Image (cartoon, rainbow, N blue to C red; front, side, top):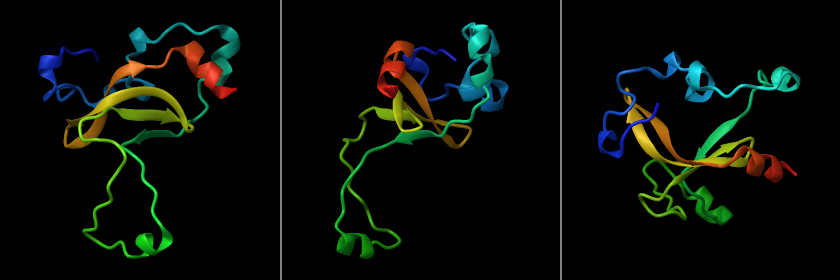
Amino acid sequence: MATSPDKKADAGASAPAAAHGPAGRDAASAPATPANMEFILDIPLEVTVELGRTKLLIHELLKLGQGSVIELSKLAGETLEVLANQKLIARGEAVVINEKFGVRLTEVVSPMERIERLR
């Protein structure tokens, strides 16, 4: 769903995510697929949104408890990375839709770049 930047707070609030096809795509806006690719479209992928990373020593990890704070490598407000099977496919910003977190994509890696990164 495309929205203007001035509608960030309520973007997507009127339409539940289930109203869209896989990965939030509208069926009408889905690109046409060559017949020889049709068989792979139902393969499940693990999609991860990465907020940031850090490294901890084992003794630091063991000291973690409820209420502990882990400092991440990214600054607040930086874009999140969207990964499919641990490969970067897009970047975006965190949003809240119907009391659940979501990601508004701001940059999508081109299909050719995605294929190149698989090699």
